Image 1 (spheres, one colour):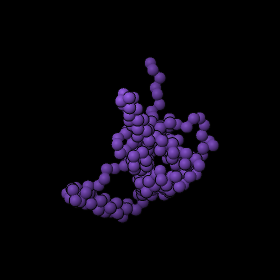
Image 2 (cartoon, rainbow, N blue to C red):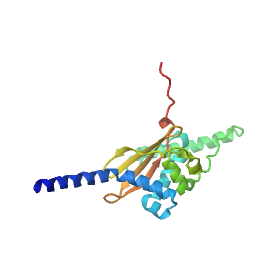
Image 3 (spheres, rainbow, N blue to C red):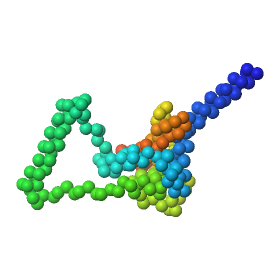
Amino acid sequence: MSRIFGLILLLVIVAAAGLFYTAPIISFYDVRSACKSQDIESLAKLIDFDSVRASLKTQLLAGDEGIAAPAPSALNDPVGATGNAVKGVADSIGKAFNELVNPNAPKTPPKPVIDVNSYLTPKALLGLTYGAAKDANRFELSQYEGKPPSPKTAFFSLERARLTITDELRGTTTFTFERHGLTHWQLVHIGLPTPDMEPKPETPAG
């Protein structure tokens, strides 16, 4: 009897561990399903929209240059923070002086206005789960052919998991989930493909 009880207990532990590991993947498919059905209420529970909005805005504004490391902290690195502030003032003065001396010189074009919220509609979020990346705000499911791409686990810990979707043309989009409860995981960050992450065309052997 004790042997059967031990076997049952082992099966329960294995099943619980399997459920815990697959929970972020289940959450990913929940997001995709909620997007397809336009279920805003479910999306509000599955996604931390403030965090995802901030992550997408930073990446879209950075463009191909990529995201820079955070500026030095005045509390932890006062010398570095002061140097960074002085450099910013010097750059502004230099730019103003250059425009004054060379009024006909070509000016840096203004950064395009990006509507980050256009990437947070159910249709755009669905496009992101299909690997549409920066084209997600123009995604149309009716134009998508083939089987929907499946997520792959790139990282997993007790508190955080990263899943990836790879598109042959656009690259790899990364979805970061954080655990909120035993098996509830919430999407907190979407990492768009960067130039160095884009798939490179295969060269024929020989």
